[in-house]
Amino acid sequence: MRHFIILCWISLFSKPLLAQQKQVVHYNQLWYAYNNNTRLTDRWGIWMDIQNKDKSEYLHNFDVKENTLGGIYYLKNKMKLTGAFTYIQSYPNDLLPDFFAPEYRPWQMIQWKNNLKNTSFAHWVRLEERFKTKTINGNQLTNNVDFSYRLRYNVFIEKPITVKKHEKGAVSLSIAEEIYLNYGQSIVYNTFDQNRIFGGFLYYFNNHDFLQLGYTNVIQHLPSKDRYKGIDAIKLTFFNNLDFRKKNNGHKS
Image (tube, rainbow, N blue to C red; front, top):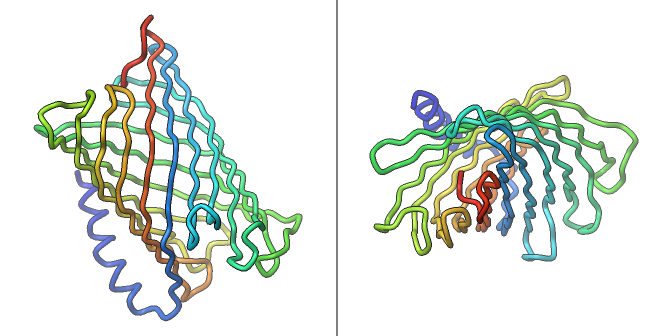
C-alpha cells in the first residue's frame, strides 16, 4: 500500500509539470493484445503475450508491435517470478508507416497479490534490459544499438460488480497505474519515462478466460528535454490462463 501511495503522489505532480512544457504530441490510439499464462507444474509455467498499438488511423498505422515469450516460477499461488524476452517493432515516423526500428528486450519480474475485503490488488515490479536499434532522422536504421535499463511498477485493482466472481458472466471494475523509470548512459532528460493510468471492466467467459476493455492515458517524456508524448487509448486485452496440473480444462491460477 505504501508503494501505491507513492505512485499517486508521482502521478499527481507529473501532470502540472507536463502542462508547463511546450512540445507535446498527442495520439488517439487503439491497443489490443492477447496474454497467456500456462501453469505446467506446481512450480513452472509459460508466459506469452502479443500486443499491437495503432495510432491515428486505427489498424493501419502502427506505433508499436510486441511479441513476448518467457518462463514463470511460482513461489506460491499468489507470488511468482517471470523471466522473458520481448521483440519489439517501433514505428517512429508518421510519414513512413512501414518503417520500424527493432528492439530486443529481456526482462525479469516479480508479481504478488493481496485482497482487501471484496477487492483484489495485483502488483508487479519489472526490470528491463533494452537494446534499441538507433535510427537516423527516424527513417534509416544504423548498425548501432542504444542500451538502457527500465524499471516498472504496476498496481492493478479489481472489484467485482456482479454477484458472480471469476465465472461465466461475471463483471468486475478494474483500475491500474504504472510508473516507468529509465537508467543508463544514454538517459539524460527522461529518467522519468512515463506514467500510465487505466480504467475499465473485466468480463469473464469462465474462470480462466476473460476480456479487459477500458481507457488508458499515457504521459511519456521523450529523450529530448522538452518533448512529451500524450496518448489516449482504448485498450482491449484477452487473458487466457491455463493450468495443466489438472486432467480437464485448466483454471485461473
